[in-house]
Image 1 (cartoon, rainbow, N blue to C red):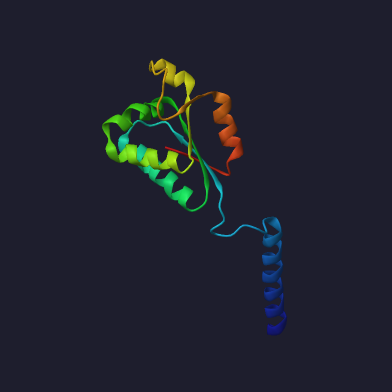
Image 2: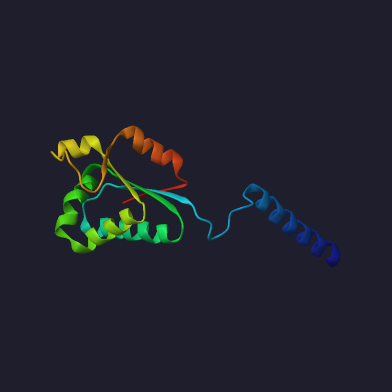
Length: 138
C-alpha cells in the first residue's frame, strides 16, 4: 500500500514538471524579459529608484521601455536639479533605453522641446502595455 501511494506521488510530480515544461520550455528564473515602466510621479526619490531598477534590468539583459505620464514628464526638468537622477537617466539612455513622454502632458507644461524623452501618444502607451510581459508603475 505504501509503495502504491509513493508511486502515485512520484508519478504526479513527474507529470506536473513535464506539463510545466511544456507551458514555457524556455523560461528560467534568469531568462531575459521585457519590462514597461510607467512613471507618473515627479518625486525625485521615486523616479530615481525607477531608473535604478531600469538600469539594473538592462544589465540583466532585459528589454526596458519607460513612458512618462502626467507629473512624470517633469523628469525632463528634474534632471537639471538632481545630479543623481541625471546620472541614472543618462546611464539608461546610454544603454539604449527608450523614454517616451506623454505629448499632451508635455504640452500642458509648455515643454515643447523635451531633452530626456520623445513626444508620444496614448497609442504609444497602449503599445507599451501590450508589448511588455511586465508593466510597472511609479
